[in-house]
Amino acid sequence: MTRSVFLAAVLAMMLAALPAAATQPACHSPAEIEAMRVRQLQIDLWLAASKCSETGGTVAVYYNVYVERSRRALTENGKLLNEMFARRGKGVADLDHYLTAMANDAQIRSQSVADYCRVQTVTLERAAALTTSELPAFAAEIIPSPFGAAPCHLREAGR
Image (cartoon, rainbow, N blue to C red; front, side, top):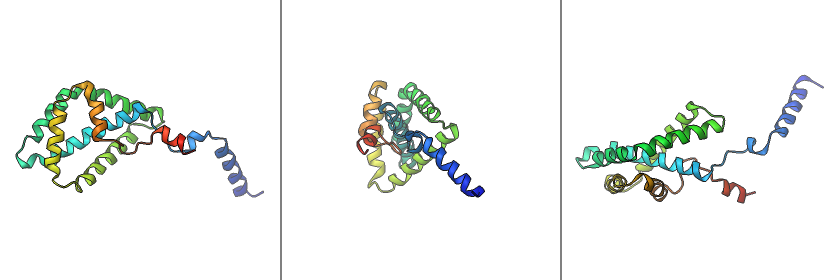
């Protein structure tokens, strides 16, 4: 047996020994999806505040009120995302890449929304009035399917 054939056989045996979950893309629990939604909402609102502040409206004020009122929930959300990536054997760099991809996706989506700043001003006004306990439900309303989310129940249904 040649060395390359031997190495290919060893590699095939190693891959066959891996659990199915390790060879398939990760799915996300409801709590993880909630954390992803809350972060995506924050990114979307930040983008709106950045893009629409030139209009002279109250967009930046609404965003600042939202962040101040939601600070504890947003901090907790960051911890949940860090834990999620750590559990999956990924580090801070992978989380940073994910959040950057999420922000890039938000920018692309914003370009296809007619009257973006008017729509986002209404969303920001609503967000600024939220209590901490209302944030997850609001995020689910605005972000039904967060960027990169793969609910576990959908994976199981597809088997």
